[in-house]
Length: 411
Picture 1 (cartoon, rainbow, N blue to C red):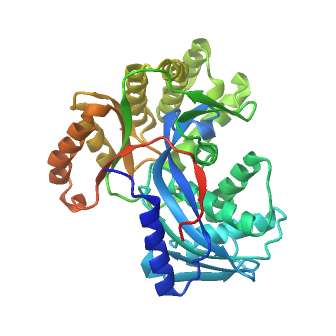
Picture 2 (cartoon, one colour; picture 1 turned 180 degrees about the vertical axis):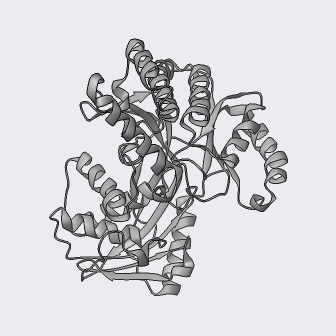
């Protein structure tokens, strides 16, 4: 399935804007990508290095600046909400229950955090949005937050040279305003993504390196969207897992000097921890087991990417998935059903769940010539296993894209 051309999306946004009376006709479109993490999923809040790419499931926002601090937004993904309208200088306090289940909590949070950080917002937006990012696994919330934040900064003539400050503020929208305990993997992998390149993030130096893919067999990253929707990290297993990791770090600070699970790198320390805490805290030690071995696999995966050794990248992707399923226990039945199907198809190098867990999308690394075979296998098995999702699931072969683009002359 090919990505919907930007021009077709522009026409869709413009038609909806005219019908809703939201003037965007002379404006721009900001397009923000999804992300595909290759290592280490759930590593960001555990202090590991990270590697991923931007992918072509997007949020498109057509927008024009307004002459006042008024924000008027229409989401085609949530038409029942109608036009969301508010003054940028008058946002409700964080975690307001009346917005807990509304997509409006994201633009409200962006305005709140930007003002909290000292930015004067004198101009709002008229905007219409549409996205095709799965509702879990490929960073829809981070993509939306970054899109809104960058657009508001732009129309107010504000330049933020330090892109990691953008990452911090986008994370704060979710953690401080919404109450979702996310890390920074999603924001980094989208904001810094460049077309055709892998993004390698080192938390110790807070730096990004772009890693080209070496020559090797032609392959595709594939999104296996189950059609399920996760209500938000703050309401998911993710929140529990993050708290468990924090609990283990607290136990390990005395005697081990551990400030994050990524600090446990050598086998001697790892074995000592298991001997001391394995019987008393088996679940916490299982979380450490995933992080410990995923971190060891990470550097092999990175080397394989550079060498174009897709088979090794896929094998490690699969091993990470088994660890996420069995040790981290962050997956879900629909996600694993997609993985089980993919594992049966020749030419699939590896597969696993993506993102925060529970619901949303799994991913696969597939020989290019076998993508259609994978799609046929999913079509023949998944809707029979989950008939209520038969009109919702999707298989999408992904391209590696730039994370943020402004598209002009389309409206």
